[in-house]
Image (tube, rainbow over all chains, first blue to last red; front, side, top):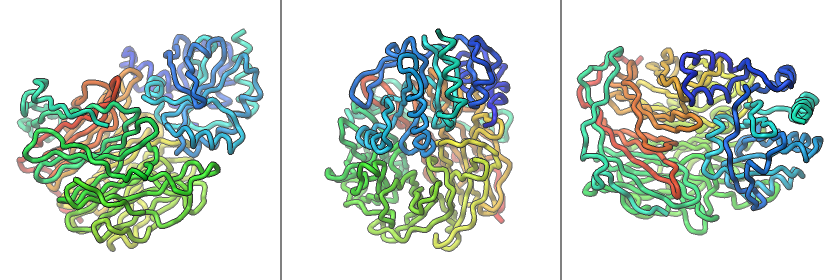
Length: 194
Length: 429
């Protein structure tokens, strides 16, 4: 997937503007900052944007498919892969089994996978997941606030979040989430978060 | 359900017909004395779980029509409302679908066309054969009113396949005294990517004719767009998937009344590679000289979000070089919508987004798309899903939705463009 570096580089002159900075950082695949030792190669292998240190997830509270309320604080201490999707998005639905397989391969005490949608089709989504035989947490972003704060523009968009809410990486478009590269990245980040 | 329209004129928020001059770009050929007059804002509050829309139309009397969908608890309803000539607000919303009909959850407003007292609205009905193994399926329905939107007849089915699949991302269009056209996307052929379809109604929406497939490899989630030229040429725009996951906005035309269409023509040669769902439609308009205008969103080969406009003077066979319309350095542009009046006045509205803002901005052209005014912000809060229409007198109606707690707001803003002669005349080939 092509890098988005050109788009953000073109905006360097206004990078002091917070909105642009955040948006650009959320998007860039090439912001040359690092802190987590998880190598750039691991992100690059998955074609996932590496996000610079210092960007924290905005707290949220969303209703889940099972009726429970999930707060971002509930995920604290875990590596979180947050997948934004919609029922009309074919590539989103296609990558769901791979997301489920990734989830199964990782320690649930240290890794959490959540999917978020603005598509409020509770029953149909439950049926869809049941038909696939997978159990992925689905959160409903009713007011689109979380999607907006994460600057979700194309779908699927997937964000990798560190154990204390720090944004680590971002992928726009589908990925092979059960690939060795994806598993290696998650394990590398989890290991580093110890 | 709507809690009531607030006319901001009465509330003193905006003076009656404030003459807000929209500064025109000094760099352009638009006459600097041109002034655009903003009318009062109409705001309605809807304390419902979700609101999708609106769509907007304005007729030559200045009557504004809106269509939207509300979701409250587990009930979804398609609504229509219009202003009355002797009133300064919108009338009571009218339910479009029957109580026994369950509109399908969707991300875009119902499509709306108004032709005199005929009102047409397309929307998606949860497929009657939906099942656990086919949970995301809908039929495309067409509702019509022949009494100015006071009542709606039972809807008719648009898609002529019986497959339990999605039929959506629809557009409606009708030229005066012409057929009603509807375009949409569906995957009835079972291929990996769906196709673009068109149908028409020649009896004021009582029946819909045979579905005509325009093209395949259609990007599944970008709404289609429709327009007709003064010579009857029909134009359809959509986003096409080209090899390498390149997403291009394309236009096809029909010169035989919609029975057949030309192969699609790429408008901007953007080279945007994206293997997912952009979920951003193109917008079309045609002036009386036949110039076809296209506004669209792309990220191009360098993945920079941008809104572009291009036009064609040869009925969509070739297009002008594209003109970038967004100029903000601190936000990302999104969801452009455009209206064109017969004289060639062009109004383009879109969102400017950041993690903390969502604004609706507008630019205007008084010289048939050559130059544009500087962008002007329209909304006060988190505005989204802007829509625009313009009548033959250059009176535009802009509408959008604002998220606010505890409800949602629909906002309507009128805007009178100068009636002076439009420059930039050009013979259509």
